[in-house]
Amino acid sequence: MTIVMDTFAKIGFMFALIMGMVVVLIWMERKGAAFIQDRTGPNRADILGIRLAGLVHPVADVFKLLFKEDIQPANRHKALYNTAPWLVMVIAMSTYAVIPFGDYLTVGGRQVPLIVADLNVGLLYILAVASLGTYGVVMAGWAANNKFTFLGGIRATAQMISYEISMGLALMGLILVYSGQATPEHLKDFFGVDFLSGLRISHLAAGQGELLWGIIPKWGIIVQPLGFFLFLAASYAETNRNPFDLPEGESEIVAGFHLEYSSMKFALFFMAEYAHMVVAAALIATFYFGGYQIPWAPRPVLEAKAAMLLPAIIMATAVISLIFAVLFFRRAQHEKGKFGDARDREPGLGGGLWALIGLGALGSLALQPWNIGPEGAAVFAGLAQVGMFVAKVVFFAWLFIWVRWTLPRFRYDQLMHLGWKVMLPLGIANLVVTAVVLVLVQ
Amino acid sequence: MSFEGLPKGSCDKKTSFVESLYFPEIFRGLGVTMRHLVKNIFHTADMPTMQYPDEKRVYSDRFRGRHRLTQREDGTPRCVACQMCSTVCPADCITIEGAEHPDPAIEKFPESFTIDLLRCVYCGLCEEACPCDAIRMDTGIYEISADSRDKFLVDKEFLLNDTERGTF
Image (cartoon, rainbow over all chains, first blue to last red; front, side, top):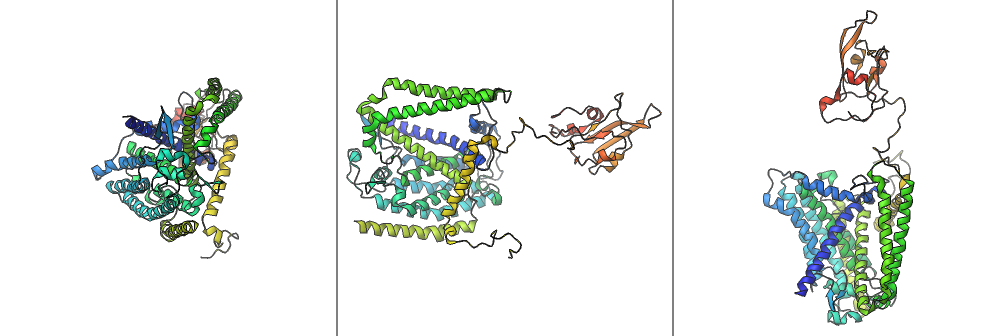
């Protein structure tokens, strides 16, 4: 029973992480795009004058799309047309099942592994589910019975076939490197094995906590730099993000596969794109940037230094929050009556919120966080790793947005050229070189 | 294709080996966008964006906005219904019906004077054609919006009192 409860709690955490990230990413995309292009971005929608620098806009969008009329083409294939948005969303979400967001968390004496399903073929599961994601796009394009959506669906298929191979080849190099590596000492009891398996993603992440020659973290990007760039490009293609967003290609095929969708069905496609981005970001972080590992600070170090680190983190939070509070209050005084409506309250309320957080952090020092003891230290280590994982995911999701507003879209022949004539040979070469080097090292 | 006459290095440049590797150039591009982002986060006030409904651009006095009909001292229109403006109007948006003026010194006056604002191209020829300085476009109003087409057909009463800014 406890295992079921644990699993539900972990699914709940992952769901909350994705849905929260989707909202934040939509905001980051709009605001980031605006700032990159010297614009101010969304700043109008407000709740009682609170605009949160545009964060209210995704909420407004949801309400708008919920109440919009769902217009459907007359000659659609009804079943496929209605399933496609759900399929895209569900598949985007189900990839998270095998991504570890920490090694384990000690709850009431039990060590709960921080992964929903620790499959022994997790890597294969990810490749399989990632290719299923195309089906939603193809179904949407075909079922809408429109030439533009059809072209979008076909483009998605061809693109996915081309880039999946490079993705698999890049990951194979990773499996070679981490398979058979000795399990880190502190995880031997937890995993119950002496050697890691490259296909199990929790092992893959654990293996990256080691140090190479005692100085460099043995992250995927250090041992597989070429593999990282191949995987990065392939995952951009898999998520249909710029510069590989040919299936949408609004300059040629209007909006591609989701052209005939409106209302909440469109919103599902929109949200699925961002959910896919979070998946891809989590995969990049897990495979090539050590997942939840904090560089040079594996679990034993975190547990030993917890009594010092926790108060330090609390103090830093308090200081930063209070600085923000002061900045907000100064702005409130500076811009008094600037708009002449509810928006004037915003800086004052923001300052109040930051002040509350800062004072709360200071107040929590009264609980003596330096006396947390070994059990508290174990929990702290687990939570610190979860925090590191989320930070990495946010960074790589931001990288998706950053690249989108930097690069133009590929032409279709360039896309195929890159996939088949550049990335595929490089992937094979990477695999061969990795294998040879590993044999020579042993 | 010939690139003669174009500035040097604009499109006749051969791709160098480093550029053909994609990634160095991509990182350069990422650097450019990040510079803009950071600059705009810390200098939000310096952005050229104008927060339109809150702050408005100041136009010169010569700006041609929505029309108005000027009045005599007794409040009647200066217009003598000579049809000059409606004749010169390239968009054919002015409709005038003239009538006999009670004062024998004045020949005629407009019984109705209608401008279709949706057809008007704001060229200002009516202003120039008018012999009596009766029609002007100096209100400075450029926010012309309404929720139905017939509201854009503005009549004599409206044009005589057209000084208020904003929607109608």
